[in-house]
Each structure stands twice: as structure tokens, then as C-alpha cells.
Length: 291
Image 1 (cartoon, rainbow, N blue to C red):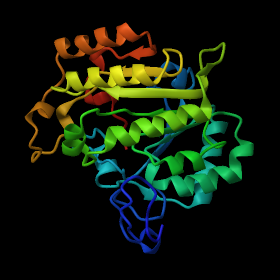
Image 2 (cartoon, one colour; image 1 turned 90 degrees about the horizontal axis):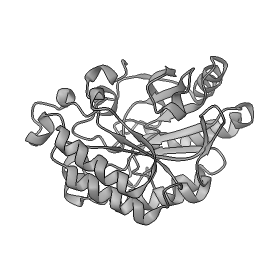
Image 3 (cartoon, rainbow, N blue to C red; image 1 turned 45 degrees about the vertical axis):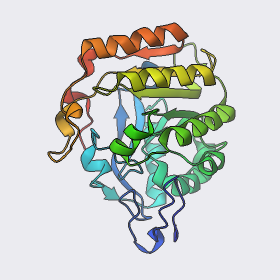
Image 4 (tube, helix red, strand yellow; image 1 turned 45 degrees about the horizontal axis):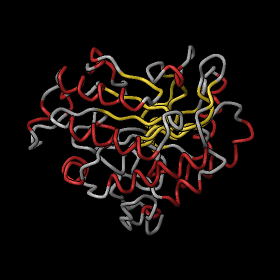
């Protein structure tokens, strides 16, 4: 952390001494929320909820982020690693179906330390819920500690990933990380009660004006995986409410249209992936967690 190489940014910040990385935080763990969450995919939320821990800061900081205060402004409170461990164990005690680490990439080293100490006490799966922009070294270090990977695959186009997330190499990095995740945990394992206990669930949010990019992503995923290798969640919940006033991309100031979303859904059906297609009624700010 004194020369941070924690994620593909490799920004070199001295986070150990209080320096701020590209992610917007230093080495002290900061969280925005830790609670049961019922609004994930059914295989994750189940009936009692997913034990979510939302980490402050982000290594992508997308211009349209719906958790803008948390990702860009690092809203939250600092906790020790022991407090992080206690929160995981407490969520398990509250009945969580899993421990869901949300936007964890920039704290991977600290999370690994914590999980090594308490993994034997957890009898529920651990989920690594990330933006997909991960280093292979980080994924390798998480082996045996993470049971379910839940990455976004946000973009195929380098131009879009450059403009919206400042990461022109996004797809090359994210696709390599996704392959490594799948190699590590294998095909999805779902219990008789419909809960995912192991495997990879890939999310893709369809953005307004970007349906061709979404279609390209589906085609690439079909080249990489057999239909039952992963669970795929197609999301329509984009809302423009959180786009800052100075954002120069006008397409991000509207919701996706029915035509845009239906064209992506039609493409998805060609490939036979198991998973979820979100209803367009989900495109409301009320689905964004309160922090």
C-alpha cells in the first residue's frame, strides 16, 4: 500500500501513509453501509437477504454512478479490520444467506487479511461483488476465500470505457479477470432452495445510447463461456438522476428506451445463458440503497 498496485490502475499512491489513491481513499477501510439487502438477484437475496458491506471509494468512478456519494466522495466511516470481521460474522448471525462485499477492489489486500482470520467461522458463501476491473494477482490471492464472484462487465468499446470510466483497457482487463474467476470457482452451484453457493454471476447494465456495445459484450461472453458456465444478469435500472451537471455525455441524461432494451434482450436469448432479465420498471432511483 505504500506504492499502491492493488488494482489495474497501479496508481502508485502511498496509501499506507495516508495518501489518497485513484480510488479516493487511503489504506484505512471505510464503509458506507453494512446490512441485509433484499434487492439482489433471487439466487443471492433469497428470502432473508444478502449480507452486504458497501465499501467507500472505487477504482472505476463511472461518471453516471448511482452510488456517487460513496464511489466518488468516499462517504462512509472508517473501521478497523477487526470491526470488518465482526460485521461479517454479525451479518451471518442475522441470517444473511451470504457475505456480499460490494465494490471491494481497492481494499482487496485488507479484505484478504480479514477473511484469512475468519473464513473458518463463516458457513455461508463469500461474494466478491465488483466492477470487473481487477488484476489477475488479486483474483489469485482471493482463491479459497471467495466462493462467488459477481463482476460487472460494463463495456466492450475502449472509447466508452475511456469516456465513462477513465479505463480504456477495461474490456481486455475485465475479460481476463472474468476467465480467471471462472477457472477458480467453476460452474454455478445452486441449492434446492434456489441459492447460489459457488460460481460466477455476471452483471451487465444497459446504458442509454449504448445498445450496440451491450450486444457486442453478449457476443464476446458467448465466445468465452458455454451457456451453463455462468449466470448472466441483464439490467435495465439505469437512471440519469445521479449524473453530475457538468457531464458532457447527453445520452446519459435519459433512461434507456424500450427499443434499446428489447434489442439487447433479443440478442441475449440467442445464446441461451441462464440468469435474469430485469424488468424496465426497475429504472427508478428508489432501487438505490440509502447510505
